[in-house]
Image 1 (cartoon, rainbow, N blue to C red):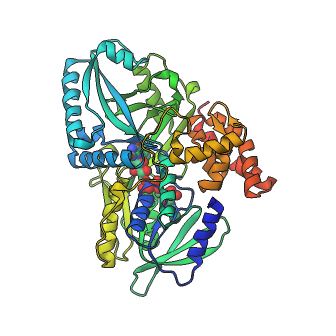
Image 2 (image 1 turned 180 degrees about the horizontal axis):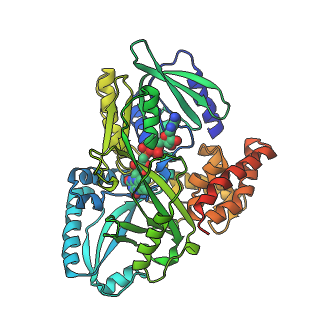
Image 3 (image 1 turned 135 degrees about the horizontal axis):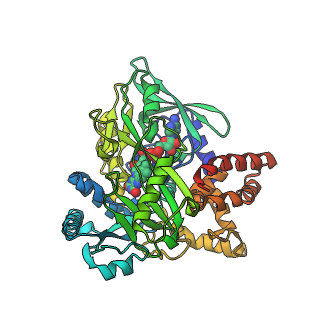
Length: 523
Ligand SMILES: Cc1cc2nc3c(=O)[nH]c(=O)nc-3n(C[C@H](O)[C@H](O)[C@H](O)COP(=O)(O)OP(=O)(O)OC[C@H]3O[C@@H](n4cnc5c(N)ncnc54)[C@H](O)[C@@H]3O)c2cc1C
């Protein structure tokens, strides 16, 4: 079934007058998609509505780690680390095409650090138990320099090597949406919630929503409504109650993407103590290097957050202190920012970096359920806990959660991560055929993107706009903003051909894309 057919089916289901959904999920990031999938698997009639594209928000802007969280261990959050380590193991098994075992090395510069990090990471291994990705151990100075070429050697004593997971966040979100469809649920993008429907007792019984492609309005009824809108959760709570207490504290994190030559290895670097009291990662990703991140409290929530000058400077300075090749603004291929939907602090003195990354489920007097906080890594557990709450709310018999063993669309146990098409998992075979049938024609040599991948994104991956294709289906904007701007016109023309759009559409798409993409450029 093509994406357009799927959208039409979704709209048919929404239009069906008799339909009262068991559950409507507002928001198509990691949190909402996880909840909609678990609900579908428990047999609930489920609809997810996303006002932009799947993972347009925070869920495409993470550090791309599936991790227990070494930093949270240092904060003493053992429960969170244990939970995330277990989820990391499930995710590697269930999305084996996207989650890979990543070696991290912490360079150490004193014997005190050797002891501190060796013991700390042994505890990290132990917490994960049988779901550990591999043991940590100390490596000599010579081995550290061999395994992390590009790091400074002055005063280096050695390194502590450990394992964590790495993934492609937006692709996983898309695969979750595809799994929802395959299991009988519905998830639609470019469909926004504009109001909550309430009865005389002020209980929520559905949403008012709008199809952003047609402007048509819908009243959609449901037994339960979940607010999974990340940093926009307070907006939905305002629809519920104008004078509600703010539940969120928003913090921004940015990443710089550099050529892989700054750390020419498949291993990742972890800098455990930065001047802002956090950690900084340098992680290889799709043949580039991602550096991040920051933790900056932010007042304004924006779907396209912008990196602040001091955040860019901080990352460049920290990297310069550790890498032999000094990165400058001119080297940056892309800069992207994301917003953390953290639970509001318990006191005015609590800093955002100190707020727990655990999740919170809040049931309002109206029955609206809001889910905030958490991590990409723990999205499945967040969903399980939310569904348990919904079952109680609806007073229905408990159905066992099955997502711990549920293979996500594309999952393939023997993934060859050196294959440029690996993110497509089991779809790669069909896509490869299309690429060959299309004469291997490339749209970007630099990013190794074939024309057939654009067609695939429209026909099979619910891509509706140029930005969907370049920002999340292919990751071009995150990997090389200049190159993505260069290919915007030909990609839009190709899309227009398939979607039967005119030259105005092409112009608007390119203009819209360029106005976003310019913020990903530093030079
Ligand atoms: C810088 C940074 C780095 C991170 N790194 C990691 C990491 O390496 N590993 C990890 O596990 N976690 C990481 N995280 C955390 C993780 O990315 C987030 O916890 C997760 O993505 C949040 O997902 P979400 O679904 O709650 O929010 P979002 O992804 O923001 O989704 C909310 C969605 O709701 C939609 N929406 C809003 N209003 C409406 C409406 N009215 N109608 C319909 N839809 C609406 C939005 O368009 C959006 O798509 C990181 C976070 C940040 C900020």
